[in-house]
Length: 196
Image (cartoon, rainbow, N blue to C red):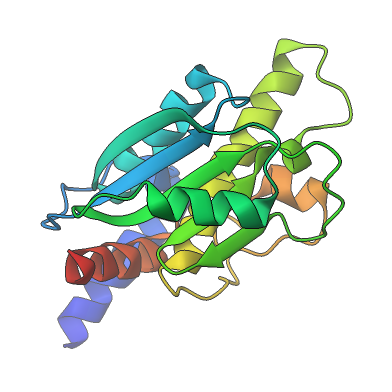
């Protein structure tokens, strides 16, 4: 037991020092699929990026249903529509929608095994440069992982570099990590394996 804890501590410290949290994890033994669903007004390149990030970060099988949700849905109606698109092998779904004018403080809605993320709410005030676009896409990566973590029942993480860290403002969102810290990643993979 003590040796196992020492190995976990060594991995955690090494990950922090070397910045290897982003390294791909071993393929999960889960047979279920994480599906990424998008609205027609969310770009296919963005969807491909998120799907790749989720697959690499969790080691889970993924698939994409791009542009199948109507544009300008509310977050609540997108949840219902995404639920109807699930197949028997899908264990969870991340639906990315763009809701112009959404003034809700929380941009993530979890219902059943579907989580909806409003990507419009994550846009920086200006999208004029490639750096602005990269910041926007990284925000979506971070919040996609946080949304999936919430759907899996994981709590907020106190480690500011973990995607499950609950930021208080845009500056903290832009500083936090895109991936789960090693302990949160282990929990997420274990839950996915139990689900399917």
